[in-house]
Image 1 (cartoon, helix red, strand yellow):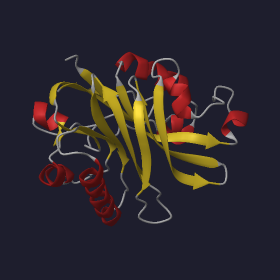
Image 2 (tube, helix red, strand yellow):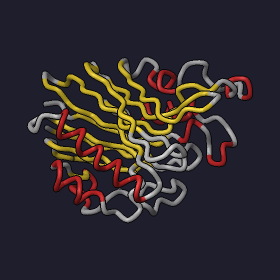
Image 3 (cartoon, helix red, strand yellow):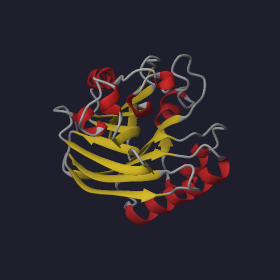
Length: 243
């Protein structure tokens, strides 16, 4: 079977560090260079009424559509945080047809709105379940969100189905991997290949292991960290998978 390449990236709403400039065109170029088949994105601006007026390089289309362009013909967006000027959330871009998409609200409180974007897609004649994750900053909220993630997988993903869970987990203490492995059988691809989770934050000098790619039913063959400090405060991660 042809290998499947996965990327995950928190794009910081398309702005550089401290929100000084729009970097979406550069983010799109980086994603094209990574050449992933499926891209998991966090902090994607679905709509903002003022950015296009203030910044000449800001796209009129939702960010996930602008980033997908002609490279990823299939995409899904999950709106999480809503405010007067617009909203942002998670997105999945795919070269393969998305046959099912659902966004589950797992917000722990009104000050930090979060969701789980679940997509099912067809790849080489079988279903692949993909869940894009951006967990909260506070431990109590994360625990509830992790419970919701586990419940979603047990209820909606068949035990023998291919599964990929990726995103920004904000797992500061690196305690999540064992919980997910014990409950739903997924493994961190970097831990499988390098013996430890990837350091992805901050992008200028990655020290913290916040971004993850977990899989079930795959073998990881090549994992890489791609820090581009001028584009986001997070580094992008990629992995090549074999069924």
